[in-house]
Image 1 (cartoon, rainbow, N blue to C red):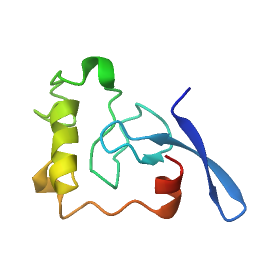
Image 2: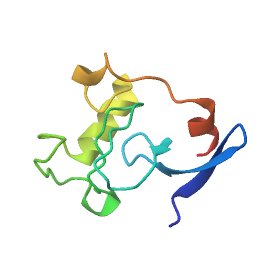
Image 3: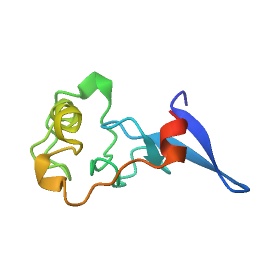
Length: 96
């Protein structure tokens, strides 16, 4: 997979995948319904080819495109998630 990177934490090497919303390498498995702690997008497998679709799944009525726009403007996939997000770690940032 072209979007897989290895992140090194101490002596441990971990595979990390990029979040489709914020782009940081926060996910252990792509499309596994994992919540990104940096933007609060729940990765349901949506990518560029269907970014405008609203799937009405765990991300509610947000499309990936809308979530990305929110992230650029406020730092979360939606402003209501701002209390829950955090900055990316050095490993998540450097692995981009």
